[in-house]
Length: 159
Image 1: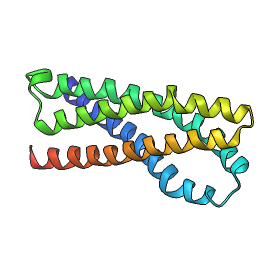
Image 2: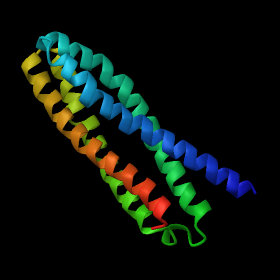
Image 3: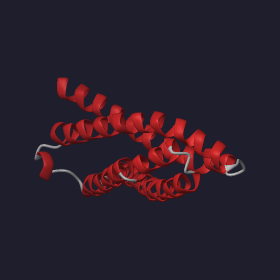
C-alpha cells in the first residue's frame, strides 16, 4: 500500500516537473520570443536578462525532481528495478539525460556569457549568446515533447 502511494506521488511530481520545464520552454520560445523580437536589442535583452534567471531556477528544481522521481519510480514500480522497466522508460531516461546535459551546457556556457556581455552593455555580443541559448532551448523543447509523447504513448500501449 505504501509503495503504491509513493509511486503515485512520484509519478505526479515527475509529470509536474516535466510540464514546468517543457511548458516553460514552449512559452518562452513560441510566445515570448516573437513578442520580444519586435523590440530593440537593449530592451529585448533586458527582458531576457530578467526572465532567464526566474526560468532557470525552476529548471534546476525540475531537474532535481525529475531525477529523484524518475529513479524512484523505476525502483518502486518495477520488480527488477533499473533493468526491469519497459523500453519507453529507457527512451525517456536517455532523452532526459541528454536534455540535462544540454541545459548544463547552456547554463554554464552561453548564459554566463550573456550575463557578462549584458552587464558590459555589449548588446551585440549578448544577442549572440541569446541566439545560442535559443538554439539549445529549441533542441531541448523538441526532445522534451518527444519524451512526453514517448512516456504517455508507451505507458498507454504497455510498451
